[in-house]
Image 1: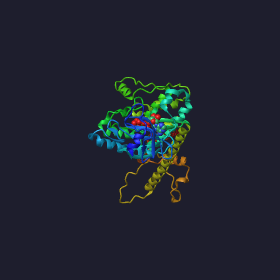
Image 2 (image 1 turned 60 degrees about the horizontal axis):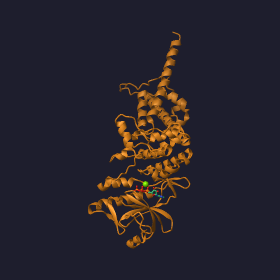
Image 3 (image 1 turned 90 degrees about the horizontal axis):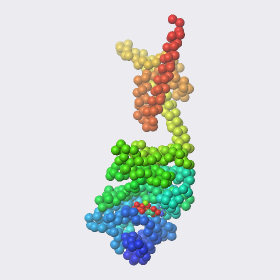
Image 4 (image 1 turned 90 degrees about the vertical axis):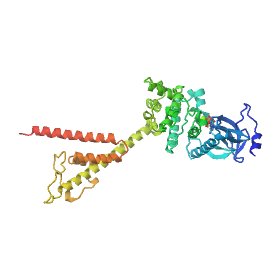
Length: 445
Ligand SMILES: Nc1ncnc2c1ncn2[C@@H]1O[C@H](COP(=O)(O)OP(=O)(O)OP(=O)(O)O)[C@@H](O)[C@H]1O
Ligand SMILES: [Mg+2]
């Protein structure tokens, strides 16, 4: 069947012989090839129709350095490449299945993953539109700053989603972003499988899996750590190109310049670029930092930088967390205090030599006797009053130990918060000491 159907298609006029032809059928006739779209060294992309006559895009695993097509079947070029070829085909299928689980309006949908003719395929939703590379080259000025901001926010949302699933795109660039007819951007062509393929085989290791101008420097080095910020670098480069008309300099050249103590050849987007606010432009520069630690670390962080409403929401959220923490600390301090008071009220057994009682650091007033022996509940008193009260009795070393204990259990910004809290306590103590001193000076001798 394969041979007959392959032969049914008219050959391509440019003499390509390693591609499927129009009319070729895949998966027992479920898909019919309409035309060839592109060949990227790792795979071949075709336009096709499915059995319900819907337009789809078919990606075929075809690492041309290690395979060829004979009578429709794809096979390794030599026996020595057989194992590596099988490995690449297997990885293509695995990555395609992983991709098929991603469901997001700005990520191309995967219809089906299957094997046929000795290799793997995926059928993708057809996106009617143009790629961003084409738009940058032809109609960059038709997009308003508002359009560009909307586009970036949507892509950041998609990338945040992808990263939450522990997937990196690895090949974000203008030619891998399609803009549909409503202006919606769609991410295509995930590159993770290609990386596995180049690592799997020496025959493929010479193939470039980096794109100059868009790939961060860590992509040029084998086995280097890649992170969310690597994808954000590529997205930053894509929008830098869209806004300025030029891709940023190659990240390896930038790295070499910095290593030689020279100026980074990267030119930040001019601050007064019409239509863009400061936050928006600086965020792109930040995403494009050479060293991963200096970049924006997550899509969420980037969104907060450029979307005022999200920024304010995040600030409110952080303030709320600080308040909750504040309250938790007050309660803990009060409890520690009560326990201390209870301990110091216990009679010392006559045969026991009194040990040095823990002395409060500040004890300007004697402790209030507990009313009717009841331990007050947290809600009984005004927290401000309680804080003022408890501060007088908690030995500093003890409260520091208690704070350090909480400190360990709190992942979010504990340092700055505790630093603030301590400096507040210190200030109050200092001001009380000053008052006491001036009162004693004023008191009649
Ligand atoms: N889902 C799609 N809908 C419409 N057009 C698509 C779709 N997927 C890919 N294309 C078109 O095909 C071109 C090539 O596809 P793609 O980017 O997936 O592969 P590639 O970069 O050629 O190959 P490789 O995966 O080997 O790098 C795209 O630039 C785009 O024009
Ligand atoms: Mg591509």
